Length: 191
Image 1: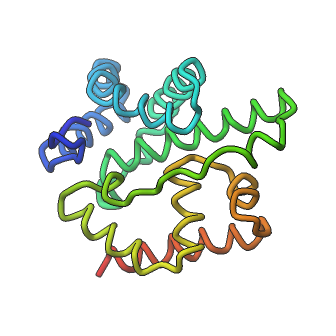
Image 2: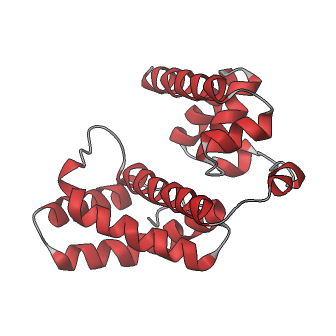
Image 3: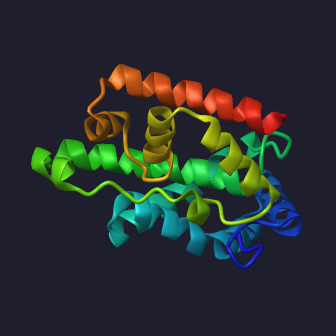
């Protein structure tokens, strides 16, 4: 997941990682190891942002690579970059971990109320590259509440319930905002 200095994948990096995922799909363990070594540091950073705990982030990373091993055959480079596919798997594992932890430990409701809202800075999130500029422009077209709910869910890794609590909105409304926002982003990015 190396690429440019800001972490944005270049075509060569994405082609390499996509090739590794395709080799993993055919059962190549060495390719899984190479893919892990190339992408794990950045993926761990993403997991840490979501989970806020190194041990849980490492567990999510391990679970993500087990999922990569099992589901590498579902990767299709025509549907998106290897980086996006890997991040989606990691994000799903991290959110599953959050849900498991929530069931195991009674959460203090005051914690989420007192937690400061993140400074959502689109410049930092998508620093450079044509793809990043397009994403930034498409995000700017979304209504403020829909954009914020989408960023809280996908950038901060919050669940629908947590986004709803943070935004003081019904869960159903948050789900609708996120679903519609994803559809609008997809349409915008395809043009």
